[in-house]
Length: 71
Image 1: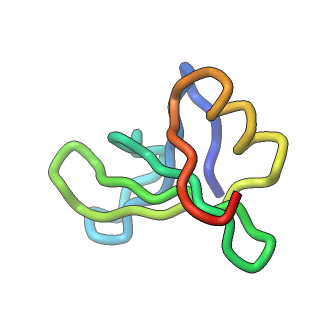
Image 2: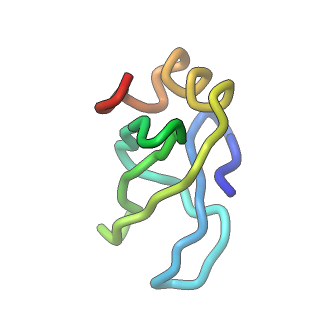
């Protein structure tokens, strides 16, 4: 589950098996009614996190993420 920490989106990295890894340049898309943040970690590994509507809109409003497709 993605959590807001210091204004950025953090998620679990499957490749490195670490929690709360900050996402670099996240883009939030809406697919099938779900808000999905996709981005990379500092090492360039792809990451994704599912957000609720309020959290997704909060990250976009604060400038921590960009709007993707489906809005």
